Image (cartoon, rainbow, N blue to C red; front, side, top):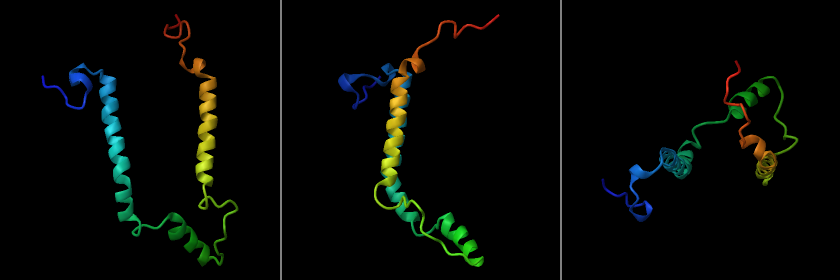
Length: 114
């Protein structure tokens, strides 16, 4: 069997645990998706309008109403970044605080009741 060049110290691919090999493949697909996303997004930018412009604004105009500015404009500044950061912080705190409850096995959990 031939050694895989990117693995350290001549480790062979057959010696990798199946879970690790799946993670490597998944990581490669995610990397390719992240790298190719901006290229694909630039191609479609001018072709498609959002639902707001294509449907909602046209229906509003036919009924005599104009679009108004939103109460909280999330398109300006880093509001969305702050909201995602806050949600991640709260979620991480809750998961860290209850780590043992989430990960430990309870006695008798794998046994079936008779």
